[in-house]
Length: 69
Image (tube, helix red, strand yellow):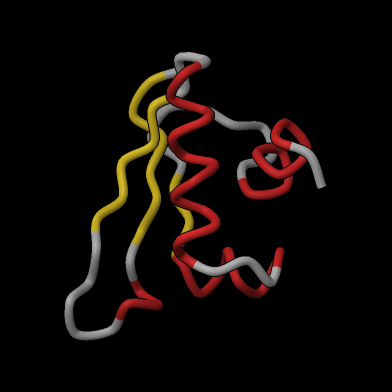
Protein backbone atom coordinates (compact mmCIF):
# COMPACT_ATOMS: atom_id res chain seq x y z
CA UNK A 1 0.00 0.00 0.00
CA UNK A 2 1.15 3.54 -0.53
CA UNK A 3 2.09 6.14 2.04
CA UNK A 4 -1.38 7.73 2.33
CA UNK A 5 -3.22 4.42 2.15
CA UNK A 6 -1.16 2.98 4.98
CA UNK A 7 -1.81 6.01 7.18
CA UNK A 8 -5.56 5.74 6.54
CA UNK A 9 -5.44 2.00 7.25
CA UNK A 10 -3.71 2.55 10.60
CA UNK A 11 -5.65 5.68 11.59
CA UNK A 12 -9.14 5.72 10.03
CA UNK A 13 -10.79 9.11 10.75
CA UNK A 14 -7.42 10.25 12.09
CA UNK A 15 -7.25 12.95 14.74
CA UNK A 16 -4.66 14.12 17.24
CA UNK A 17 -4.51 11.70 20.16
CA UNK A 18 -5.36 8.58 18.16
CA UNK A 19 -2.98 5.71 18.88
CA UNK A 20 -2.28 2.16 17.82
CA UNK A 21 -0.01 -0.52 19.25
CA UNK A 22 2.75 -2.17 17.27
CA UNK A 23 0.86 -5.46 17.68
CA UNK A 24 -2.22 -3.89 16.03
CA UNK A 25 -0.05 -2.43 13.25
CA UNK A 26 1.38 -5.87 12.53
CA UNK A 27 -2.07 -7.50 12.56
CA UNK A 28 -3.44 -4.92 10.10
CA UNK A 29 -0.47 -4.58 7.75
CA UNK A 30 2.05 -7.36 8.45
CA UNK A 31 4.68 -4.59 8.59
CA UNK A 32 7.32 -4.56 11.31
CA UNK A 33 8.62 -1.76 13.51
CA UNK A 34 11.47 -0.64 11.25
CA UNK A 35 9.10 -0.40 8.29
CA UNK A 36 6.53 1.62 10.25
CA UNK A 37 9.27 3.88 11.65
CA UNK A 38 10.28 4.62 8.04
CA UNK A 39 6.73 5.76 7.25
CA UNK A 40 6.54 7.80 10.48
CA UNK A 41 9.52 9.81 9.17
CA UNK A 42 7.85 10.28 5.78
CA UNK A 43 4.61 11.46 7.40
CA UNK A 44 6.61 13.89 9.57
CA UNK A 45 7.89 15.53 6.37
CA UNK A 46 4.23 16.24 5.54
CA UNK A 47 3.50 17.69 8.98
CA UNK A 48 1.93 14.60 10.52
CA UNK A 49 3.84 13.96 13.72
CA UNK A 50 3.54 10.53 15.27
CA UNK A 51 5.25 9.72 18.54
CA UNK A 52 6.43 6.19 19.27
CA UNK A 53 6.50 5.20 22.90
CA UNK A 54 8.47 1.96 23.14
CA UNK A 55 7.56 -0.68 25.69
CA UNK A 56 10.94 -2.11 26.68
CA UNK A 57 9.42 -5.25 28.25
CA UNK A 58 7.17 -6.13 25.30
CA UNK A 59 7.94 -4.34 22.03
CA UNK A 60 4.55 -5.37 20.62
CA UNK A 61 2.86 -3.13 23.20
CA UNK A 62 4.74 -0.04 21.97
CA UNK A 63 2.32 2.68 20.90
CA UNK A 64 2.21 5.09 17.98
CA UNK A 65 0.23 8.23 18.78
CA UNK A 66 -0.66 11.16 16.52
CA UNK A 67 0.56 14.32 18.24
CA UNK A 68 0.18 16.83 15.38
CA UNK A 69 -1.60 16.92 12.04
